[in-house]
Length: 310
Length: 285
Ligand SMILES: [Fe+2]
Image 1 (cartoon, rainbow over the protein chains, first blue to last red):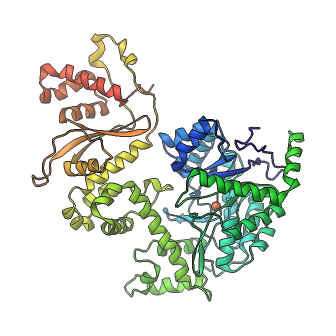
Image 2: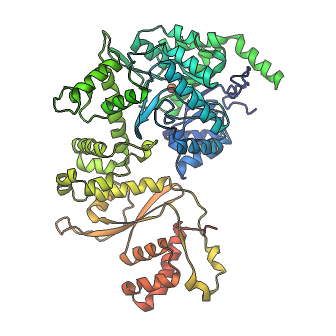
């Protein structure tokens, strides 16, 4: 396997359910403003500073030009993962097969190690809200979503991971908790989970539940990836703005999460007031420190197990 | 609880309401207001900290401002020229008529030039900013050139072996990024003043003298979007290429503009120039 650019040695995750998702280490979201610095580091003696990139699928679903070229250049250097916002998996509209087709093409183009989208809906009646709207947490909704995830996975020929969203509203007829809904969909659809620890924290605050109760209920073997990001306050709500460093409370929750489910590829998201690539790498380095401290010997142990297996 | 479809239709309608959720529901002339209120109360939870309306408002604000920010980037020169407040109103009116129906926000502004140019609600805006629609067209063309498909460019070599006898029958192919626009000169000048168009010399009439128009060539080379002014005859020739005309046919079309004797050498000169800067693609087999 391709060794991480930051000098860590990645391992394949064990366990059948998450076998689509190799352990990649600590990554960051790929943002165009960082392209010059990324390619400077890749072409010179400096370390890249992170192990992998997550690219936002829709930004690269274009015919050509720089966006497409950047991905084909990067795939030769560093593992890539795709993260989408427009699969609209929870919508009552028919699945957008053009979108799924474009996604399949992009997976091919990038050699993406896995791909993810969100457990939510983003539009209905052909109108796109460009936002992640929560679903009612009902048995019928979970059947509906799971059926569509299966369809997408059949079309793509691989598992996808669904991410828990930050939310600001809930529905009167919710029949179960969000964590039960997420676990149930993942089970029925046999898909992966992208566990956004910041989103758990934000939603826990906004809806008044215990974030640890949420995470404890997540089937760890299905977790492909973790997201970390910064949020902001708009009392009485917390808003998932991705415009701050990760908050201390979220670092604590991340450490606790790793203790529960073991080593998982982790990614820092930063989408607004985007800092320098160097600052972003510092945030990734902090994740690495928390990761090593939380897992201690387990990280090294699983790494050597994977070497024997490979 | 209503079916998923009804829930989503309600939430989508309220999130996209022009005035925001709270004001829309407070206004007595909102169609089906009572039904909306009842449906909302039966659908979205209110708790001691925050009511359903305020919770939905978070999404309504995010919806509008996310798209506004995207369009501010896409039409940055238009924004700079009409100001924040008018641009805000423009986007409000635009979304009412053209809500996003594409999975990518990249295309949310696709119908902006046409909306400014032709929509009835834009009449006052048009008379205040008669060049705005063309400025939007130019900015949109730059975006389209930025991520147009990559195809192999034609080279001098491709034409080196052509028998001079056959030249009249030769067809040419434009790179997918190439666009030739005829625009209000005031729009072009505003774009140029903003630094996005190469400051090449071209005769620009004063603003008082009606609405002179000019041609602009937009294309991408080495991942950089470029523009340059085009004389009317060159623009005509480029349009001929786009329509699949042969060298001979192009010469006939421009003869009226450059003179019959000059036509062949003039067209050959333009072709060489387009080839040089990467405007011509290899023939698609
Ligand atoms: Fe996330």
